[in-house]
Amino acid sequence: MMEWRFQQPTRWHRQCTALLRQILPKLELRNRNFVIEKEENKLESLLEHYWVTGYPLQMPYIDLPSITEAVYQTGIHSSEIPNTEFALAVYIHPYPNNILAIWIYLVSLVCHQ
Image (tube, rainbow, N blue to C red; front, side, top):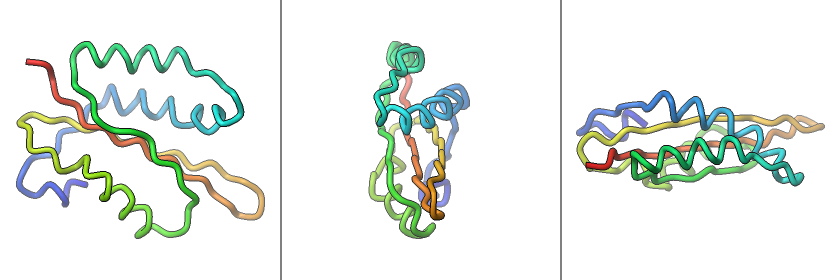
């Protein structure tokens, strides 16, 4: 992602990244009716201070270029707003027969002025 933003610095929001890492495994479980209220509340608290743009992607793991292209196509990296920060988390869930489900959560955060 940093290579895609060669004209602007890429700043990472570590607190949000840590939160997204907690959410992703639970999203896989949520497909089985698991509720993640605690993490949703933490994510909502970020909205008090930031405009947050982004969403989780879920796809089968096929190859790295396919995943990279899916992330690129979101366009989240293309923000030109000064002082934009980003958070990125990845979770891979294994299934039988070498099947992998990959979750990628990418967001941009812009501090309220």
